Image 1 (cartoon, rainbow, N blue to C red):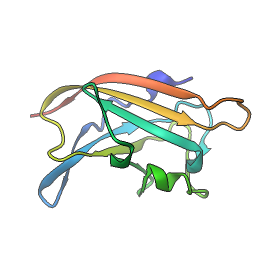
Image 2 (image 1 turned 180 degrees about the vertical axis):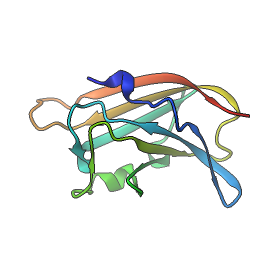
Image 3 (image 1 turned 180 degrees about the horizontal axis):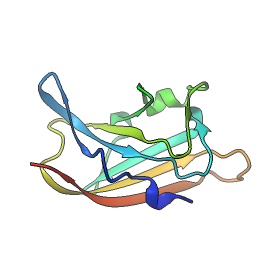
Length: 130
């Protein structure tokens, strides 16, 4: 429904921990007009420059808490609210080189009144500054 707004223009960059680049991050929104419990997010798929990212390398952060996608399946108290920007982080040694990158995001969410599980997609070209 709000698929073209899933990937935010700001917040794209490499992640540095203890002086080492350990991956990259971007901000994402829910493609649904209501908030949902985190356990209802069945998958967050990331493709960077045509290369799919392993599910095990994706982390989701909202309101200061971080989960793996497997941990989200069992998270029944926290929600992802409509319009709220969440950080999606990909663990990737050395992160991304400076320059333009094509980022593709897919979110598969479970909605109680739908007889199917929709997967919504967005793609944008974003820059990592030098």
